[in-house]
Length: 243
Image (cartoon, rainbow, N blue to C red):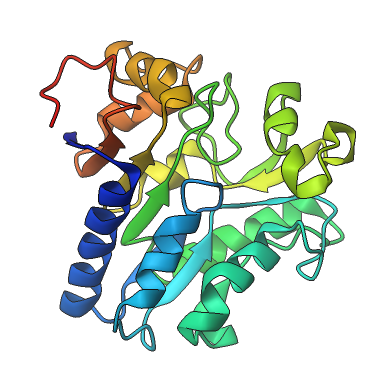
């Protein structure tokens, strides 16, 4: 794993945007995995400020709440459309979302897996991390071999995500569809963004503990092309040079 530490979250965003722009210039038909969450909001804004040609790439969402249709304002599909896809001019055929309103979660997971296989997998996947070490919605206890599936959300995750539901954790769905750890680790390159002092403990645990189901993010140690982009607040407990 390559670890890059910056003074500020703004510098993190700029460096990640540089990498995405470079990859798209070299490979216009790039398949990009999009993530949601507060860490990603300034990244999408930065990408939209740049003269990037998005017309030949494909994008895939990382996860989605089960029970929410794509037009629900708190769905990840709606958030990605609102914050990035529409302004980037992406056509419907360029965008693939998990359908949180599908009739059968097992069939929807299988459909999504087939879509990934048809494009040859993800070239580049964006990732954040939860304070309990979850990747996408792979909560602690998720198997290294897990695939896209319906998962139970922890109370802690629901509390942290309550902002999109009027601040009420009980309004947050209890289940979600998510790429599995095996799906994520099959992406050819991973860009891992971690910012803020609230992530310092889990980032240190993810990097300094042996990979295990207790901390799903620890499995990123095994990926040959992961780059960590952290600000100095998130990296405060790491034994690596600080800017």
